[in-house]
Image (cartoon, rainbow, N blue to C red):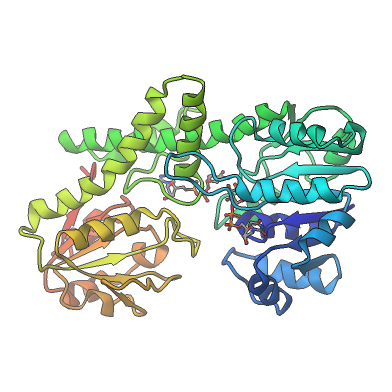
Length: 426
Ligand code: UDX
Ligand code: UDX
């Protein structure tokens, strides 16, 4: 099939490459000319394991093309997959202006039957609005079908997730596009969920809201464990053995970040409020998450006071390991709080050199701890889990290691004569 993917971001690029692997002819377009030029020179605008090789291979096979000609491409391709950004606004709602721009282009150029697939995460009712907009513009409903097809990709594992999905969700208004949709992702044995446009939108929000709820539950439990001097890791392990609970997304620490969970939670809350529905649980999930940063700063100042003037090294600035993405990174929120408390902050991250005026970023992991009073693990990269603790101990001035991801072997660190701190570490 001939498919135009609009938006060459994390989701658009990964999806475009995978669709080419599935044998489709894919045109990936983006308004950002520089991004398209880079892609046409084989330069990746984002880091995602395996994506660069796939893009090179399928571009050479003429299955995958990149262009800035958004209007022509939308006019010429029968299947349009929208993956533009839907960033948060100050009131928690979603900025749908990019979606609206693409919808206007489609509506003003449509001259043959098209399937319009929304992959971007949008609030409930958005795809019904797209349907309505087309009708109001007098476009006959036999000339198009709107489809809501949310993604569940995790950054850093996006290709794995797209080639091994646990479900494929399609929201439609009619049955007409179903046969085509079944041929889109050639993942054998993957269950399909066919539902309404708004049903699919809410499946996406519910998924991310539940993942965030598990994490905030884990963080609240870790606080309780801390008070009783119990190692939360034992609780995590035991909970995970119950198939009704499941082992994933129970890791306590600095909280959840990234471009999806925080944004989708506040957008779901906003959508619920527009229908006068109180969101007590979501509110608690968001509040617990926000308070995690303060909790770890307090843990540090309990043993290092005053904090002002202290040199603190923060290892990990990305919102999670395996990505170069800094969007809504809890580590950056922690760094900002430390700076507000008058600390001198040194950082190291295997993937990103944090360019910020009041932070000293290092390219060398061990140099970054030279003469530091304390070291904080903010993102659980393997580089930190398997690091040379005698080297660290020898270079630091202080001896505090604050594990804000419960990812280190406390015994090993204590045996090095370092003070191992954390929440719910027994
Ligand atoms: C996006 C959405 O933000 C997210 O809600 C959804 O779940 C998946 O798609 P992501 O891929 O991470 O997430 O966004 P981003 O990396 O910002 O990429 C969006 C791309 O769309 C950018 O490259 C931007 O230049 C492009 N874009 C935006 C267009 O091509 N046209 C536009 O009108 C607006
Ligand atoms: C998430 C969803 O997992 C994915 O299905 C959806 O499509 C997009 O949003 P992503 O944003 O890539 O994916 O990150 P994810 O791996 O979910 O992690 C989100 C945040 O939660 C990270 O900051 C991570 O550090 C944190 N986290 C995750 C925890 O604090 N504890 C956990 O047990 C798991």
